[in-house]
Image 1 (cartoon, rainbow, N blue to C red):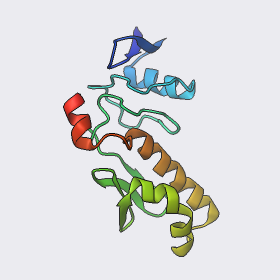
Image 2: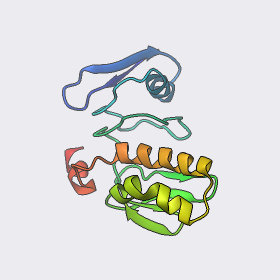
Image 3: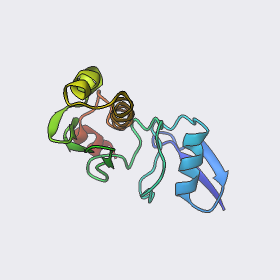
Image 4: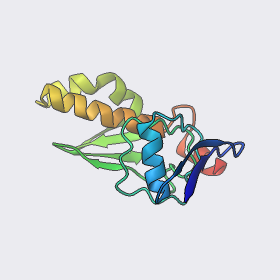
Length: 143
């Protein structure tokens, strides 16, 4: 079966693939570095999908009302704790703070350089899913 990932804005096809599921199609799109900003992924069952490096800003279906990411890192959980507030372990700060201060925070909490790099990837993934120019409430109303 051919699965298509379409734009939520104009219905254009962003990526298509003959495969067994929409989840496999999304994973293939990410692996192919497809630009999925604004993708309509509402209703897609993506549990367990490998989406590291995916750019999903404005993707329909990736809002706080539908999906709150939680990642088990090598030391702590990484999860959303509010409107653009990311919690790593017991520290909850805005995503922008994490993007600017993750190295310092990691060093202060005795993370290895590998762990600092690992958590930076998690922060960047979640930052792409929660664009700075839209609050969760605004994204909910657009979907």
